[in-house]
Image (cartoon, rainbow, N blue to C red; front, side, top):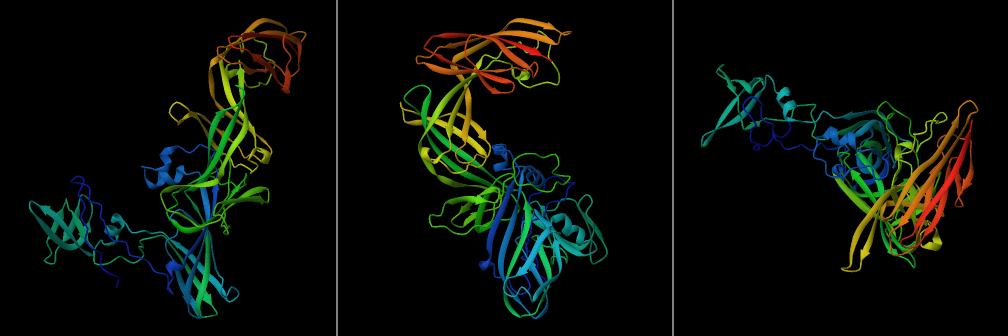
Length: 523
């Protein structure tokens, strides 16, 4: 006989809807006596979210369980070790405290004490969790007790439960039938068979050796993800085009898998890890990142090394990941005084004309709309000589600058970066310059469709309203067709790729530069 459930109070919401019941969960113990204090946790976390794409609402979700599960773009491989007392022969072993978002097809069980002599004959995942509705359903034609508030006192009704439609319908011992439409509490003599209070893994294990076995269980669970957040402080350099950066990095982990992992060993593997597609994932795209169980290191922080075609970040100390939580762990100590370059870029085409098209664009008016904003970037190289040199996982970068007037850090922009190896360049877009503006105008256009030829002339004006000189790059996409040549140009240009050219211009305070060029297309 299982212990009876205690009676707890609950305020009703409405007359026609039965009250939700609150009950104490019964702990399902593992056969053979699992020693919970000896459980060891290790995690492998995967993420298929784009860097910085997780909205803050998911850090503290207010929606239902299904909403939270669907919204978290990741999963994890969880490994747990526990001590079990097994008898020689067939044992029934139950593991509780597994993640409610478990994928039962990924479960494995192994004895580390006697692997050759221990076999799993059957395994089950049982998830018929106890709830108010299920208790009522299981107690149809059985006796229960409900309580109803009647003025200053509480009325008690006991009888056989006949129905829960519109309240509860009870038949007393004398055969009378009573409808209780509004009840406050319900009491059940025991937890019905088949219902459990926690998701449970159950194995039928054949053991050749009796005694205490160290067992390892692993499985995959959804509702958990990780990414990297970078915090940068920018300081002006010797001129307006240079600066110094203090770069810090944090790993952020969201755990809504339905279980907590105390004192877990953790590794993070950054890279694009492929996974076999399934119907629920075909429409999802983005970066995939992996994390595995870790071994300790002396300083307790992350240690990086190459791992297959990815990069492995090993946390040198155990960490606790509670369920329904967001945790941040420092990825590496702040790198100070990293030299950077401030880059101003004028991209005069309106955003809708910045792509390339399937044929020659012979319309005179196509792409003549003008963008006036000059974008601001910070550029630095991820190299050891600059105080960096660690492969950088994809993530979101936030940049601040110190205001010397009161010593506070003010936010000046953020961007996202992809996985960046050592010795590669990092480019961060911060926003648009206030005092530097641009203007792009089509000054001439000719086309001859019979000779498959057209010519376009463009004028670009750049004005510097700052009190110090700046360097601006005027970026031009030659989008009308792939075969082109510059026939006239007022300024030197650099070919960035097959359809892009750059005009670097140095502007003194209050100076305006006018760039003119003519491009000829043939097809």
